[in-house]
Image (cartoon, rainbow, N blue to C red; front, side, top):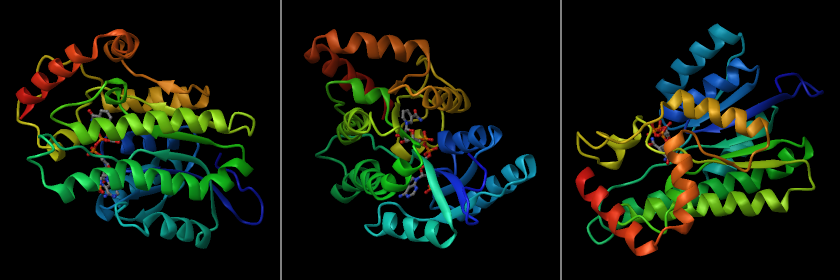
Length: 267
Ligand SMILES: NC(=O)c1ccc[n+]([C@@H]2O[C@H](COP(=O)([O-])OP(=O)(O)OC[C@H]3O[C@@H](n4cnc5c(N)ncnc54)[C@H](OP(=O)(O)O)[C@@H]3O)[C@@H](O)[C@H]2O)c1
């Protein structure tokens, strides 16, 4: 995926939310497997540090695109910057995302709408803009959803759970639409993974105690393997696999009550 596709073009894997957590580990995994990268996030300093690390191990410096993806023009400007750099996106990894703990009634409305702007709107905008190039190169799309997408709802993190149900549903639908185009679409559905996510969401200090966790590098490796194998849903960790298998058959009211209790403890 790193070779010149002709005319001096770079064939790149674009990863959003690459400045930390799962996105940074996805960048490391893709770089190790020989992919040339374009990295997107707001934190230019962190992206440059990661680019230094990747350049020193792989010899290829990733393209850095510093953008706030909640801005309505971000996807358009990313597409323009890729064009200006003669970088052709063949693989798209929509990883950037965040959640907030608290009830809809209590959280700031604009903050909650930013979850939808990032996790939903920007993901759809980037995907649909880059799709013609991805299809032309019979490429791949990896959308980072969550095990949250399998739940009937997520009281105490309602907007986040709903956003991830969207990502999962969007990925399944798009995968089917593109089935004859040589493009695969995979939804990566991690469970609890210690990253910057918990602090940004406003979790209390003891939130992950007793919860089976997966390391972010393991999530990234599972994501890469699943994407390359063309899997539509990738669920890292036995606990999460079990959850995804059982949830569709579990009584919704019971699950909603349990989630509500768990989220209360996390505050
Ligand atoms: N950690 C978990 O337990 C878990 C579980 C399931 C799913 N996930 C999903 O995994 C994905 C990655 O999360 P993570 O756990 O790695 O969290 P993280 O450590 O907080 O990383 C989030 C990444 O998204 C970027 N980002 C946030 N807001 C952005 C914005 N407005 N514009 C551009 N980039 C933005 C951040 O970079 P900047 O701050 O530099 O912009 C960062 O690179 C998310 O979609 C999350 O929902 C996480």
